[in-house]
Length: 152
Image 1 (cartoon, rainbow, N blue to C red):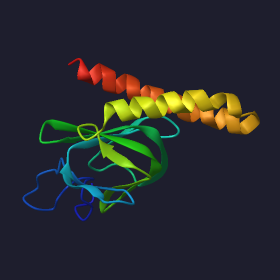
Image 2: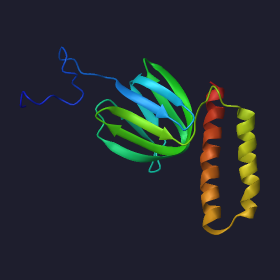
Image 3: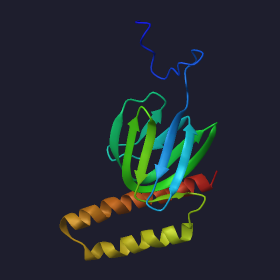
């Protein structure tokens, strides 16, 4: 290997490989998270994907779901309702339409929102109905995952 080329993830300092990378989670209301992380699992439109240090540059649309941040062995789960994820040499940035920590979520209010979405399906038709069903499925998936984590 050419000595002028550093392996991906090499910090250049003392030859140790970096295992963390910078991550920012931004929503219109606030900077929901900013710091060094080990991994971020993202609910992508094309399927869920994990990001580690040295990940190839990518821009991906995200769907409503639960984003998982792993840092220092601890996990933090955040509900995101769509947006974009961008991985670059500077780190990962997620621009979320909405970002709410599962710890801050009012589960009763969330369940009520899902019930309202179900009730309004009868008013929709065609592609609007397809979109409403898809969004409802995402919300049900979030609700299911929240129920599963509450049992642990």
